[in-house]
Image (cartoon, rainbow, N blue to C red):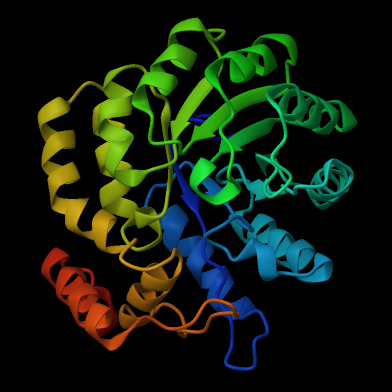
Length: 301
């Protein structure tokens, strides 16, 4: 790989759609370049922010293919390949490997409510199915269950190609327990933009970010500064971006971020049900933040 592997700034990419609901392939290719030109270290398509749950198999494969082709090995592409069915997650991982992904992001099984042993066996099966890097994604707010530090440490220690965790539990104590005890080359990536700076301060390796969809240059600069120990610069950028980090979740992700990107002229604002456009009141609040940060300037070029 040509850049730092599994650390720094990874973008949890949106999927642009046309008005008829089909994938906007031209916009997606432009968006890949926008991200890489902005300095991000990884691209992560087909996840939560990419509305992966509403992409069918052929669409998922096509999005991955486009992102990989357009990235041209400039940065690693980590494909969203999770499912609450272990067998389906294994098949998705195999397809991602065949298409050419550099790794997969695999979410904790949702709805089923597995035990901690169930989580362990799920990710073990995925990792053993293909010899490719696996990033575990722990997001209890969406899955209904937490992958505990003890379970994550078992996975990190016992399964070599489980290389990182995207931690979106919001529990920094749990994240520190993992950082403290995990193998040295295991990466703990923050799954919440606003917590990235504090997590890096205690040993985190970076972020899988929503806000870098809109502001890849600023977010990459913030994370790089934090990792390089330039705390003042990182803090200044953190507080500049904080209003956008917060407004991005005024409604369910990725509703606000896609609305912001449409304001910036980067995509058409189209969603797939059950997601719907942002409310007028929240759109007004979002537009104010986007303008204040200076993100509307590129649209005027």
